[in-house]
Length: 89
Image 1: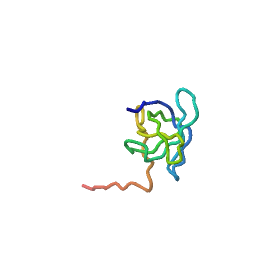
Image 2 (image 1 turned 135 degrees about the horizontal axis):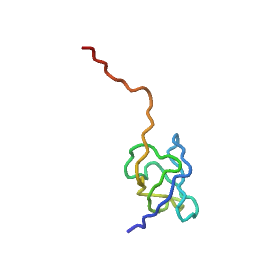
Image 3 (image 1 turned 45 degrees about the vertical axis):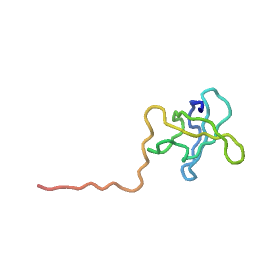
Image 4 (image 1 turned 30 degrees about the vertical axis):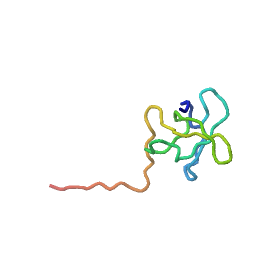
């Protein structure tokens, strides 16, 4: 069983799909990859609160896993224009 921790996203590189979480306890920042999120609704935003567990990557470094947004998840950034149908009566 993994310990669930809380923190906030303190940096995020949307193009590369990773960033860092600063724990509420104020310890060292934890690496987080986009694939570590349980549900990928929207993109992580700086200062967004998350819950997570700690694991280790292939090199033995700590990283966040089972990451979930706390409260309302971020809105997905929209790329391109949304089409709306216009009807004339």
